[in-house]
Amino acid sequence: MKKYIAIDGPAGAGKSTVARKLAQKLGYLYLDTGALYRAVTLYALQHGIDLGDLSQIRDMLSRITISLETNQGLQVFLNGEEVTKTIRSPQVDRSVSKVAEIKMVRDFLRETQRKIALSRPSVVEGRDIGTVILPEADLKIFLTANPETRAHRRWLELREKGDCVDYKSVLKNILERDTIDSSRAHAPLRKANDAIVIDTSFLTIEEVINKIYALAING
Ligand code: DC
Image (cartoon, rainbow, N blue to C red; front, side):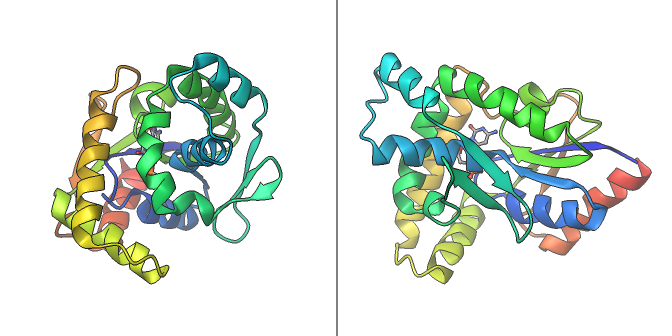
């Protein structure tokens, strides 16, 4: 039985749903690391932080406490205030890759992520889990899907929440985030050498979960 499962991949590959349901099925902790970057981004937007000014970033990080609760789905708290929904807004979508590029932010969140992930058997999803955050994970999955499928999924998700954005701008945002996330200097989105690749373009969520579940219990 695998104890620490890392799931990495680009936006819209299905990581969040798969990781959350897989964690439920295994009775493991679920950690959505993107939520941490999103919470930092929300704070930066709310306080007009200049992302090019490292002293402002340092000061901002000293004022931020993020906590997660997994009682009813995943709840995210920023300095005690619940921000679960706000961190998924199109405004945060547009800025989060820029914030995630900043080394000081990544260093700040690294220890938080390791502490939560190693507190008990866990399914951890993000971009650099298998490579940087939990290189010791005993099962590493790299989920991928073609950009159009990923944009369509994200568009449906936003529409369900009542955010009326057009498909083309969602696709544009996905492609931009892919470029920034994969080409940044610090901990870019990259498949770990020992990760297993699963293309989810033509698979249902259940099929993906079952594949990973089988690897977790048998592999
Ligand atoms: O998974 P998500 O879309 O919620 O992630 C939001 C952004 O955070 C994404 O564009 C890249 C960044 N991120 C990261 O750089 N490293 C992680 N481990 C998780 C997310």
